[in-house]
Length: 383
Image 1 (tube, helix red, strand yellow):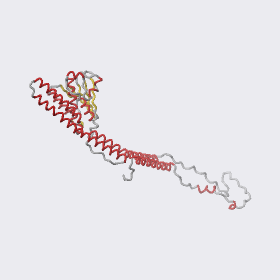
Image 2 (cartoon, rainbow, N blue to C red):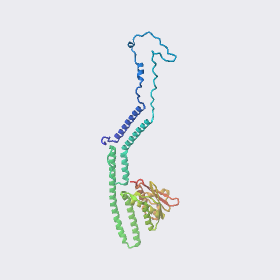
Image 3 (cartoon, rainbow, N blue to C red):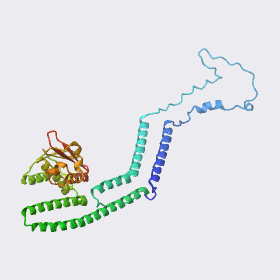
Image 4 (tube, one colour):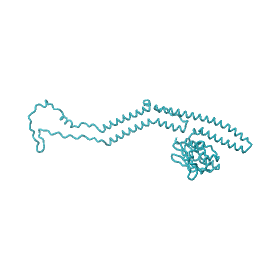
């Protein structure tokens, strides 16, 4: 059956249009015969047919003298020698244009035409929908299976190009991981030597300063390599209990002496556990570093999970709300106060939110402080 169909999308569309035209013509002819039926010949047609036959003079014979026609009687009866005139012709039969059976017939025909059009549209658009599903799945799992190369000529070509693109992306990511691993090894080797030499310093103050600088460099290298490697890209999505995750993180921060509160409940969501934990951890650390405390509020809706992390710090200038999420961007005040960080915490959190199909926004609170709002859609979680 499939081999007899046109191979190109244009041929299939042309076939669909031709079929629609043919069906329309059949419907029009059927309706015409239904609305204008041909009645049978009435019986009196044989009586009146003789009035229209030509009369030949040879068959009539010579004309006879005009005979007087006796008048009718007073009662209106004809003389016995004359026959009465034929009865008047009946009116032509009337055929109603619309009746119950005809309306039902039209409804059935129109429904059949609409069903055929719907099936044809689904048939033509199925390759596009299949490609859209594959593109959506590619964002969640780069290691997913290739797209089946079948259907029309255009659909097979699009599937082949999509599979080539997926293979190139996978190869580039693997090459990036190999490069980052090599760079990480080359950078950490001299840091390890510096750390060993700093341990042998006799001056405790210089030893402390060296250890602090080395720790800051190690943190910067680790964070930068994590951003470059995108290690969380291949992390599978699982059904995650966000409330349990937040409670566990809040307990760890409370044990370290920080004030953290969690309010609200939420249903589990399908996400990457380690990535989401790092995203929330960066936001909590940012709130504690600049606000002294953190308050987490959960707002669970049908299609979106909202996690709002509030602090009581000084907030941010309005023009800096978007800039602070750029990589390696630090406010001048934080540099002067030497509050640590390399300017990648919010950037990493934003990248993780986008990988989950969500958003991360910053806003100043009316009562003072900053609120970081993480919105995670549940639509992408239903896989």
